[in-house]
Image 1 (cartoon, rainbow, N blue to C red):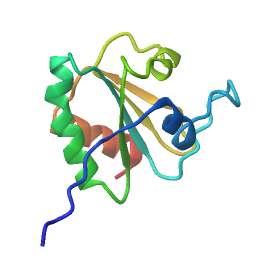
Image 2: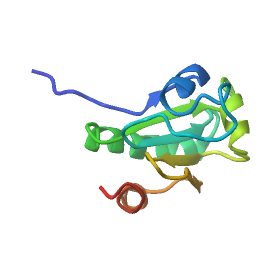
Image 3: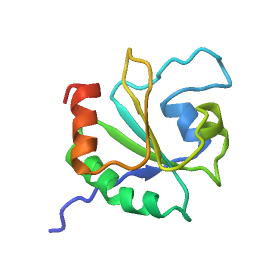
Length: 123
């Protein structure tokens, strides 16, 4: 029996609007989710993004029942990164119910991501 493999899901602007925030309905950010979300902005040509991808996939697997882990390709879906003022990749935003989004620029290792999850999501 194969075990379930979870990984960060690449999402579109439409799924962002469904899962996180529908910016076509309001200018005031209000997180729609009920569980925390890690959203990573990446590009296929970005070496640091490729290095950070396994860290995100590991977090998606480890916290699969507690956190959603999404990725947006800045080249195919530029609207969401523009809304957050993303200037470089990788950039990661942490969303939690009742909290303002927290932004982290650059890649972070396994320990850095675990610390961010513990600090921001109390997990």
